[in-house]
Length: 139
Image 1: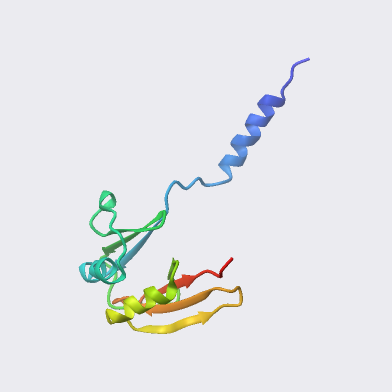
Image 2: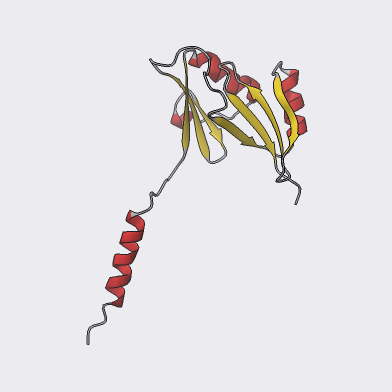
């Protein structure tokens, strides 16, 4: 009698893998009519670390990458800034908010308490995109 269980297991794993996308990295491409201005904001004001290995307009967001670039069809400010939210999970929300406010960043929501226990402060970038600082609840 031939044992086909190994072959069946292998076929099952291949089928399961074919049903799931394996993502090696994650990036967000934020386009602007004035990418240099937006890059300077994320670099000099927000203070995101650069990812020079990924290009001039690339910034590290934890394990993800934020790409700030131009696009021929991007014109003016964000039309629906609430559609895409850049969520930055940080350790000390109050300190980061104070640092950003000291650089002239205007917050539209300050330390809003969420039902799940976290805290969110929201501000705009120069193109009108929403950026959220998120503080997780203490464990």
